[in-house]
Structure formats: structure tokens, C-alpha cells
Image 1: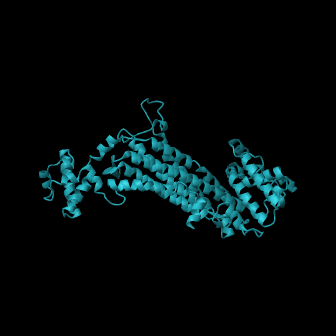
Image 2: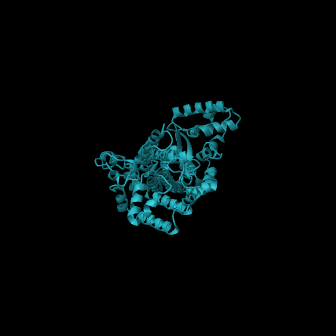
Length: 481
């Protein structure tokens, strides 16, 4: 059977038999890698520049190719245009689509672009560009969420809430201190993404199929044009490396985990049992059966989404496990998990708006922070300042708490005579040492909930957030190289 049966294929020369029609459709990646059209166009333009420098293309050919590539990108930028790419009747993948489109637009010159390159290096480059762009989007939205948390922290002023360990009330903290805890998580998330961007920011173009290009290409040309730090150092590794996808997905897993923890706390705090926050109606729904309900749909969905992110990371882990060098078709399966988490930037946009719209119920939070002996640690510290060893102070205050429980009163409601039954060290100044303000301010260390420390943390937060807000992967890498 003649190889005309395979007409239009990028690899048809050596084959005589046609592909099984069902297998042909099943193995096509255009149904998901259509998303890479902008990256494929950018990488193809950069390759054209390298071919021109190598005297494979003339100046006019290079200009024509680059203009045609831009036109292809423009023609398919809309949702309708993207559907045309996705549903192309014969393209195997995004590389094939662009080649077919070029040939249709400018004839045989379009076929000349593939000189000196392989689809193995193309997909490795496209995916790096895609992940780098997604990192930029996620980092910007993380910064927006952090800013929303800081704004709420400013608005909270000196409002107080209980902190919890083991889901039991522990010590009073400023609401602002609790909100800033999530800012710290966000800053770590952004740092992980920046680290991922730094490691992926090397250009595979010029690596060929596995051993390197067969033409003397100046690989730095494409690397510079695409904003990469430098060309990759080893062609075998470059064409088979998908570590950056896995690292990206793991970094997003942390983002999801922190979103989920926030969502879980807000969901709890919005219950009638807590009544610490009022859910914004714009992000809540009702019940079809119970007229009184206002359900926390946004936080519940966020809490669930982390499973999808973590699942994508686990899928790529298993896809890469045990793969021999270099490129294997298995690697096609790493793309869909990377695309499957493209909802993260939008989710962060929503949670930032939700955070801005949250209403904190200060009175219930304040009352909760002043009941349940949350000043017991401050009371023990008072005794320490009186020269009592901490373990002894701990026992004395524990006994006082047990006594107060029996009376149904708080520690600061015991009389001085009652306190003297637990130790002679108690004096009139005990009562000022266990007020709500004193209990907060005794945590006067860097990172503590003392009011002045929180004011300092709030003042420092915008500058720390600004380091991620304008984040661009290539610039960050160059700055840190």
C-alpha cells in the first residue's frame, strides 16, 4: 500500500500501512494541546530567527514566516477560533496544525520551518512557556488575595478572636494576626512558584529529537527571543524533562491546601455555633427545601478543588516513574494534568473578592476570646515574673482554673484571697496582667500577636506582597541568576 495513505502526516515517508482509524483518533493530542497555539507560534517564530541566522532562511522568508505565524495566532485567538483548532479534521497535534496552516497560507515555505528541529523539542519548549505563563497568572492572583487579606486586617483594627489548637480555644489573638497567617502561606506559595519558574526557564529549542540539532544553530537566539535564561545544557534531558510540570503541580497543591484551610475555617466560623463571620450573599446559595438556609458554596467548592490539583500531581508522578530516556509517547499524558488545573487563577480571583466581601462579627469573636480561660498562659507568665518556675506556675494556674470552673467564673473574677490559696505570689497587679489587652501584649516577640507587633507586620506586608505582584518568571530568573 502506498504511503499516500498517510498523506498529510509529518512522519509518513517510511510507512506503507495506514493507521487504524480508531487508534488514529484515540492517539491525537490536538483535542487538548490546542491550548498551546500561542506558545507554538512564539517558539516557531524564535526558531525562524535561528534559521535565518544560520542562513537556512532568507530575510524575506523569515519575515513572511513570522507574519504568517502571527496571522495564524490571530485567526484562532477567539473561542470560535480555538474550537476550529481543537476540531481540526486531520491535525495530530498543535505542531501539525501549525505546519498545515502555514502550508495552506504560504505554500512550501511553510514546510521549510521544520528544518533542524523535532516535535520532541517543540513540545518541551511549548510546555515550558505555558507553565511559565500560568505561574505568572497564579502569582498575580495570589498577590491580589494577599492584599485583600491585608485590607481586612486593617479594617479589623484591634478586634480579637480566639485562636485554636486541637480545635479547642487556646489564646486570644488579634483578628488581623489570624488573617496575616494566610498572607504568610501565600508568600511561601509564591516563592515556590518562583523557584519552579527559575528551574524551567531554559530553552530546549535546538535539542533536536534527542541528540541535538543537525544544523549549527545559535541556540541563544531562540532562548533570548522567548525570554529564557539560556539554552538547556543537555539535549537528552531537555527533550525528556517534565520535572517542571510535576514541580508546578506540587506548588499548586500547596496553593490549594492553603485555600482549603482558609475555606474550612470560614465555613466553620460562618455557622450559628461560631457566628464569627457573615457570608456575603453574592457568594452563597440557598436551599431548595429549607427557606432559611444560606450555604457556603464557594468555600465548600474551594475545599474540594484541592483534590483535583493533588490528583493531577499524582498522575504526572506515575506517568514519569520508570520512563527510560529520552522522549516517550507516555509524556503526552503529562499535558492534560497541566491543563486540568487552569481553573486556579480564576479560583483565586473569586476568593480575593469573597475575602473583601466578608463581614467579621466582632462582638461574638470578642466574647469568645474572653471566656474559657484563654488568659491562663498569661496568668502562668505572671507567676514566672514573680520568680515561680514555669512548671510550678503551670500547676498553680491549672489548679486555679479547676477551682474557677467549679464556681462558673473566669480567672480574673476570682478574689485575691481565693488566688492566695494557690500561692502567695499573687498580688493586686495580677488582675491587670490578665486583661484581654495584657494577654495579647505579653506575646511581644517577632511574629507574636502583641498589638504593636501586629501593627509592624501589617506595615511590612504591602512591600512583601509587592515582590510577587509584578512577578514575571523570566525577569525573576534573570534577577536571581
